[in-house]
Image (cartoon, rainbow, N blue to C red; front, side):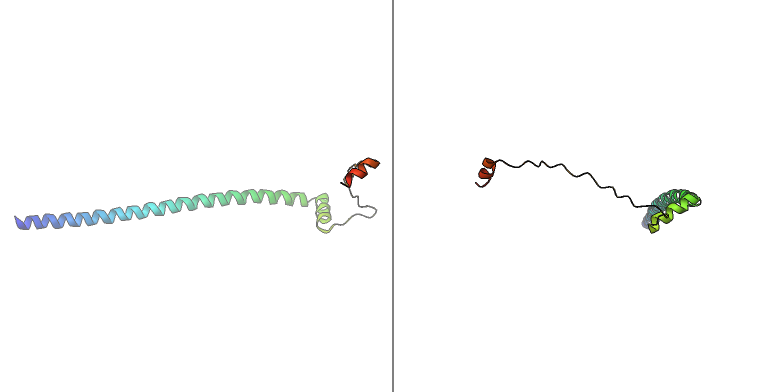
Amino acid sequence: MRAEQWRKGILIGVLLLAAFWLVSNIWGLAGKAHVAVSQANDAKWQYEELEARKATLAANLAALDTARGKEAAIRTAFGVARPGEEVIVVVPPATATPTTTPSWWEKVLSWF
């Protein structure tokens, strides 16, 4: 009877160790799956950003492929103008200030 209890105790101990080992492996796999999913989402986001950038660059290349686009890029980058062109400077309108002169009593009161 005593030997049978020992065997059952050892069997239960081995089964508990195996269960603990399996649970720890499952826990580790769940963590790795979470990391893999988050990295996949990051990669998808980066891919979408790169595709948007690619579309923008393709549009810029198409604009620069024309003579007008090349001229605009050169004018912007180097600040050049065609012969005969002049610079136009737009100045904001001056603020209108009243030009009335104070009366003699306003001058006297301003001293106080």
